[in-house]
Image (cartoon, rainbow, N blue to C red; front, side, top):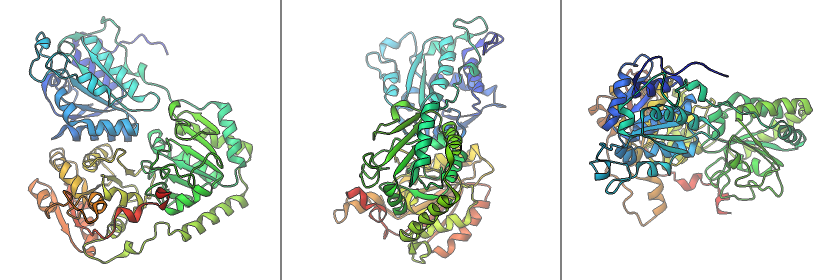
Length: 577
């Protein structure tokens, strides 16, 4: 649509233009630490506190993860702000998560160039000149795109184009690096290039090609044993309702990838749980027996396919349909009979309409498929394990997850960390509502706490719990200070077994550098101005959760957990095939 508007009605600081650009993208909070020339941007944010909240964190790692989760949950780019040297040193965890997990995100940082002395290697400079580091080259390797803005107009327009890049196609992180001259000048209605409203740059969502949709729908309607594999792309598109509608129309069982866990509630009558290396046997067996696999929003990576075991997915005996917003992802790991490029929500709606028009399965067929799935669930112990009810001390993780499920609301957000505790959550924790679990993609420790902080800021009326191991808690416990300072009442559940469990159990008898001295994390939390309770008996868990969820401040529940269950207990035998 043509526009005669400009971004600014009067001449003003470039930083004011940058903030206006963020507002135009619907961004209502940013995360970071003031430093270097980025202080000028915070000065502009001072005047816009009614529209954009500046959340102060204690470490750039927290800012990056919080920005990634903000982008994941809102569909708007999450913004991490900090000085160049320390964004490079500390902020790459969330950046990598956004890059691998397709979350829209902006890294706004500076060169610390101290012009006109850039070529003399000034302190903390990142221009790439002799004696300095190259900020752009470093960030280009972990983002969709990285650019340096050298003048005020570039600073504003590069920010707007970064929003566009972050949201276009497969979403991801984009870095804008500001030269000191860019942040120090002014912009206005007469600037060249002309500065238009950010709305003009926002990309449209894309439907699938109709011919491709019709061909895939015919294959779905004709399949005898169809299954759906749903990945994180369903979350990115917010395609929860569309996924459920198509599955119910077909009575097709739905498995999710690990990163897609919770895009389809695991309490649904058609749920298979997670498939792949650490998934449910019900999922792996059912997908393996399918004659057609519809993969939505997933690249079908080796972990999802048990190292591409043909007993799980095999294009030589199964019809494969793949839906992805990024053309390169379609038929990336396996050749596909049908590929549809487009937004998952829009394409799933198109498929639903096309299958319904082509002739959906009969009521008798749908009933038979559900009966077959129920039989498979019984045979393969779908979310059934004796230790869900164990009274052992130290506490079994399965029993802890049972109590989390009992204590929390159906729509509570649960964020996961990395390590063995994440594998246990993947395999044993049964999700109850769509999009309620936030799983890290690259598997780095220190993710759960900042992820929970962001989730609570985005959805203040919902319960939010971070589930982490003691290793991950040690890396991100400074997030409790942010929780205290910013009044973010999350609940942090620590599986405390005094070890890097996955590492230690993998070492078997040759244990080295994988055990911690026993630590009372409840005491640590209380010393930081938060609540803390240590639980050593499973019978004390219900009261601990009730108190924590009702508390107006962040609370740590330090749970002394057993080492008896290991990653081997949740590893599919298909990975050894």
